[in-house]
Length: 111
Image 1 (cartoon, rainbow, N blue to C red):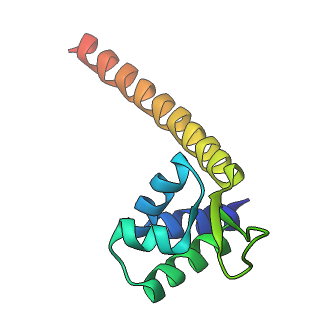
Image 2: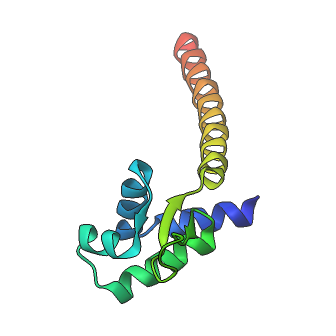
Image 3: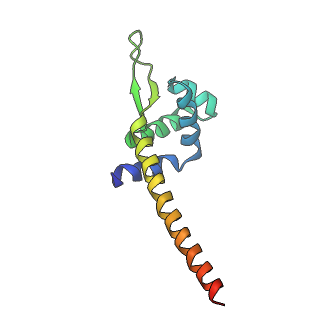
C-alpha cells in the first residue's frame, strides 16, 4: 500500500493535476475539455493524464461512437487509501499532542 500511496501523493503534488482531479470529481471529461478548462496545451494535458493514470487516480474509456476520444473518470480507491493514511496520521498526532499536553500540565502542577 505504501507504493500506491506514494504514487497518489506524487500525482497530487502538481497543481494542474489537482485541478484536473477537482474537475473530474464533478463528472468524467474528455482530455481536450480538461486541457481547455485548465488552460494547458494538449501535449501537457496528455502528460498530466498519463501520470494520473499511472497513479491509479483516473481511468480512461472510449465512447462507442469514436475510439479516438478518450474520457477520463476518477477512481475512488486511491483516495480511500489516502484518506485512511490521513486518518491514521491524525490519530497518531492527536495521541502525541495529548501526551505532550499531559506532560506540560504535570510539570505546571509541580512548580
